[in-house]
Length: 454
Ligand code: ATP
Ligand code: MG
Image (cartoon, rainbow, N blue to C red; front, side):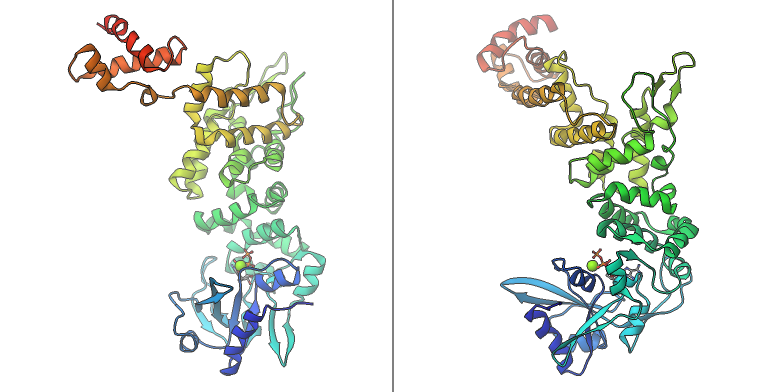
């Protein structure tokens, strides 16, 4: 049995005492029915925005959708309750935005414009009892764990194509299936997703790939026909073979990408996206030797880097996220060998950035497990240890224990390009392990270097 917290009940009573109807609605009701912890509270009411503001002078209203934010204090913490006037939607002239929003009298009208039955349930307190309005059988669908469109799915997806992604994303997050008519309709109208902005697709995709069932979510996108529009680079990798005689791959490239995501241990969304797309360059670079039948993908990470940039542009990623995505894809082929020099390891760290080491390794773990290999190897473990050790040595000229001023003073020379050259040469020697990064040792080398440069 659902119980509303007392502060919610008293909040709703303020509306009821003023003669308005108010309901908890949408994802909040779904969460309550599924016994999840609910932290976002959404309400719908018969009061207009102006009437709400009269009841709560501290509320704010700055959008055209009828949503008023009401700040309240609960348990010492400030939170905002969102209350939206019952709406009914006018005509849709395209798949993006309803032409106009009209207030509605009845909660049933408001529920009719919502996307899925499980999101179209309203709940209120009446005469001390909970009263549920559920015209589309949402409670039953929650029981059955299905996503089903409210009304005619074909019409609903044509009205607003973002619902295509929302259906897959919510099914993935909740571990639900998509009811067969709704699924058929998704497949019919999948192409409409191209009319939706990159930002809004990104928001849905990011929620999907950070959920527990991310890999299955990508497969569901493929089944629904959305993957070919949202991430065509991944879609095109299905059926690209990589099995060679005596090689470890057990999956085609597309399946490998999905399985890599499934096993990626990072919760970071960009690392997860990078893991999902890391091998997309394999489609273009695949070569099969006619005699040995060995399949190669030379430079696939370079082609992949370009594709990562295109994906980032299409999904409107921030500059920072783009940079990280591109670095992770470009360098995912890094070698793990006990024969690499410390210098080579430091070059690798400089290329990817110290801050990305853990995520680069998480991508590798996903990559290995997603090809049917073991999670790690003694080589990888040794490599990880060395990655930490080699960082004790300076990374750039700026980390040297002497400065340009020391150089000028010690050698009695004037500022000029020579100083930089000497500093760089010193750094090379430290990086090569020929001299320690200690002030006296470095000063001792100065004369020698000066002569070699002149
Ligand atoms: P979550 O917050 O966990 O993502 P939610 O169901 O609360 O899930 P919101 O995006 O917060 O999703 O939307 C709140 C409610 O608004 C939904 O439950 C649904 O009833 C309605 N809704 C949101 N987007 C749409 C849409 N594109 N078309 C129709 N109804 C929608
Ligand atoms: Mg919500």
